Image 1 (cartoon, rainbow, N blue to C red):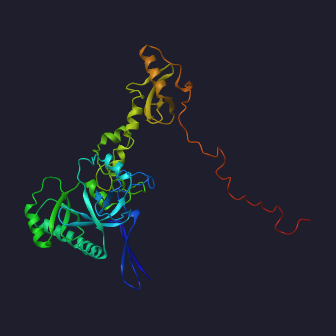
Image 2 (tube, one colour):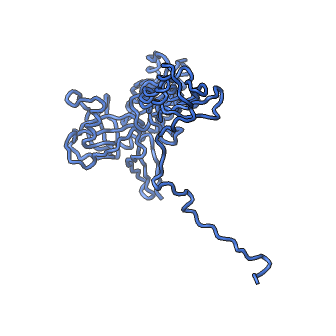
Image 3 (tube, helix red, strand yellow):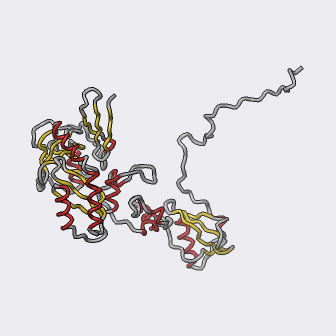
Length: 375
């Protein structure tokens, strides 16, 4: 029976044959972080025909040009050019969509000199790559111990080895500036490799690790977000959310990225909602604002200043008209006679049918007495 191992950090599946013992590595698209759906697949467009997106560990990707002349396609494991030596990655995007991705990221192919794809990976390259991967966990644990012994205020979140095993990238988090010149010397002596230190933020670390959010879906930072915008509690205030740190914070400990998704819609709706600073004046009393449905643009008023038992909804445009009347010394008759606002309501596709219409009909009980047959 063959053995199957899944490496979600790099998006590969390792299948070990039961008879031969050879390991075959294939691309697993479902594990690809920051993946892009190729909706232009099969489109006869030669734009960027020699350009490919190559993925490495977690969210590290790059655009490379095919200089080998080989027929490279999606899912191939390739040997690419690196700053020192060579690296091994997986082709995750091809075709005209690569040019669109470069345009979205602000990459000009006439100015940038892309690194090259040397060739497809051979079995010897894959074995060397796997040997380097096997060192990552132990290296990270030792690196954390060394940093703690040196008293550096930093956290090493992940370690990524280059495909040829000659270099390693140490991803670390630090609140301030860290002088790690001596640390690099110790790392080089301890691990006998080239060292690259790369500082990341808490949101980037969450994207590297991945996980499931409170919404039940994959974390946005691991799925598609590559540029992190600043988020403040003002976004929660605009949406009238409770300022509870436990509910507003994500798994990274920072404010959730999704707080920014609907801010523009709320800000646009707020421009059509009047600011009520005083109660509305009616002939039968004063009406106090109790709550506001921002997206539906409906405001709820009550004659009782401290209770929400009897609420009367008013459209935001009607509230503006009543405020204008009060400023001119006029008072409407009553809040109770105001028309109900016609806000958007949910309507099922099947109309107003009963939700129990698919239930099996209940059997009628036999009206005959239990004592015997009816005479």
